[in-house]
Image (cartoon, rainbow, N blue to C red; front, side, top):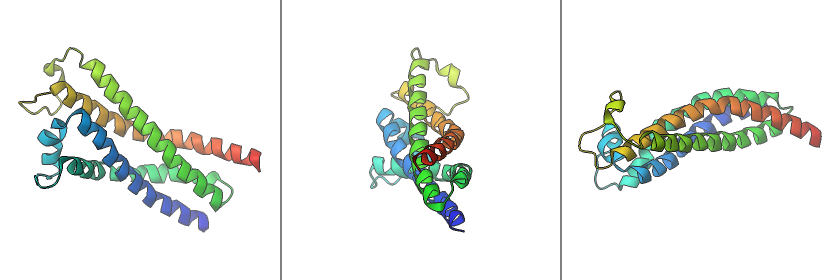
Length: 179
């Protein structure tokens, strides 16, 4: 019963962590391209109040855009916690897995940003017809690079699930050797 309570609490914590990750992720994104927010995301999320600083609005966008990723991450990474022999070890492993998931996703997002940078070395906007590219961008390359980063973050979050499973297996073997 204690393991089930740990699992449920982990799902809630994963939702919160995903939202915070998104808020911090979008601070990096805003640094790369404020236009991604001022000409796209602020409109998409109806965050147009000029009295609220843009970085605060970017953090709100990030939280709103990513909290839901905590549900599949919490469920699928959390279920791996049941391989641990007791609730205390399960809790430690689950908390550490959030760090692993967040770090992996951040690295994947930054790799996407880097990939976008190289893909846009000689920018041809015609190659991005399927993307939303607002008119009158001052820095279209930066805008597109942030698009690569955001797409990569979601993909990284998805790929972080099997990474978390591997981590749980590793952690269980390590804990068994120490015990």
